[in-house]
Length: 167
Length: 321
Image (cartoon, rainbow over all chains, first blue to last red; front, top):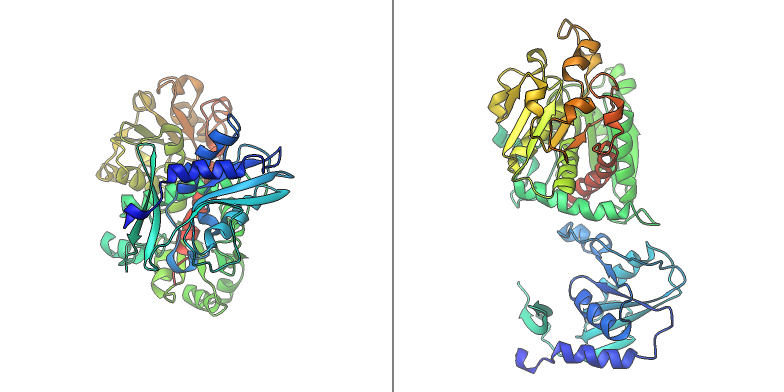
């Protein structure tokens, strides 16, 4: 099953090529924990070497809080640059329902008012429940509706896998 | 009530926090969950927009049967930063004077669709009583009951210690002063024990230490110099003047001589020891101003962390169906 899934390291390289020359001069990358942060670190190295990278934890804006409670998450959002008036590229690993992106936008706006926000996604698995689309995309990936598409980081090497969702 | 029943009351069968009444019997895993969550809420306080929507649409009643402006304020800020609606009730001054019972007061507020009660009462056990009689899904936080417990203060203190010392496993912690009247000290002792602090000391005159305090697993010192030696953390307690009837102490001045924290005494602890105090401080009684305002003091960060820890507790309680 996962043999047919693309190599995320190659997808990141392809994304960087798409993005090169299409980012504003003041653009900054912001990765969403956990997988999005790994992808954003790589893109930042390729596109904006030496530039500070933002990281977002979206727990506090999740919409499933009322159903499943507070997610255990000790990582904090860290945006080591002013957000106001700037172009921000949000980076995540897998785009599914779009709810994480909605939460990330809310979290981002708690830090200021960006001039524009773009979305860079490693893998789009479909199944959107909100009007969200990627501006930059590594690949569309087909997985069964009862599976999660999961990015892992094994000693610095990214890997995509389709994992049966626990019932 | 046995500790077992108490812990069942505050922890559900699924292991989730249902009420926060005491740190006694609170599993280490839950304490760590609260502290980890608080990390995120500290960062909320550092942003442009110091508000997150987790408790939007929830109603929280701060029901204070005993006055405390500061504790009530920190709970109020915590709830407001979580977007809850907060109602402050100083009940001591109203309904109970008209003869209403504690539970009638609570049931009336519950009929106004309260989701959470933050309760302070001079009687030990009052928050437990309320927790046993509210509807399922309504949560109770003990904001201090008698001499019994003040769990959010205990938790913010362990949060502060973890922030500065990273790990509890090698620490020597001393709690100094009026332990007898201190619900804060009890909450600290239970939480620190559960988290595995190997050396926990209480320092104070025999008249201000509870009978058989050693049974809590602490070493007892009546000589402050001896007790402070080698400490990583020194927690000063407020001398509770207003609770002290009778001749427990010769005078406040005498107390300062023996148990007040001065720079000379602090020098006996480790050079990187931190100094804590739950507030409000009596300068010149239990703590000298140069120490309270000195480089080893983390008393103001305690206040800031207190908001984050209360946000963590409220958001864990506020998500129950």
